[in-house]
Length: 153
Image (cartoon, rainbow, N blue to C red; front, side, top):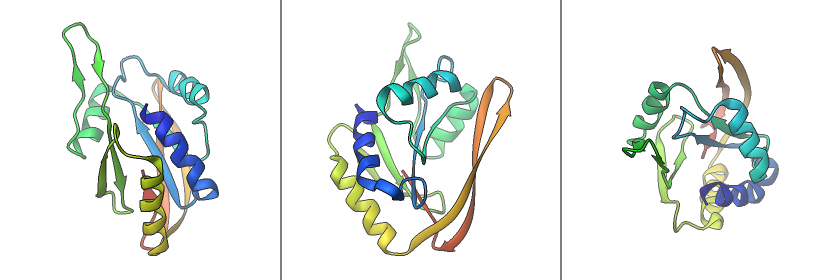
């Protein structure tokens, strides 16, 4: 459900996705979601677009990344994973700008918020480096600041 909404956000951003804004999806099931599985999922969902990153890592790395935004994975006694529906607009400094309830937010609202922020001067050139890390890939963005930064969603 959230991926479908973000696909519409990606369409709404057009050429700005990957240049002025990024979409970052972090798995909540790193025990099963390898980079290859996430790549396959992105292709199945039409989400394999420049500027949209599907990230995984060790369970500890994922937990640390989520905790930075006060989010946590939930595992049931049977090992099932509860999927998060929260969506965050993150500023160039890595801080939360706005949070959204993924069950009710409309893609148009997210695109409007991103456009507003971009019009306020958040622009940046960047590169993305993908480095092998054991059996996972670590994606690291290196940003060169021009103005106030770059938005990630």
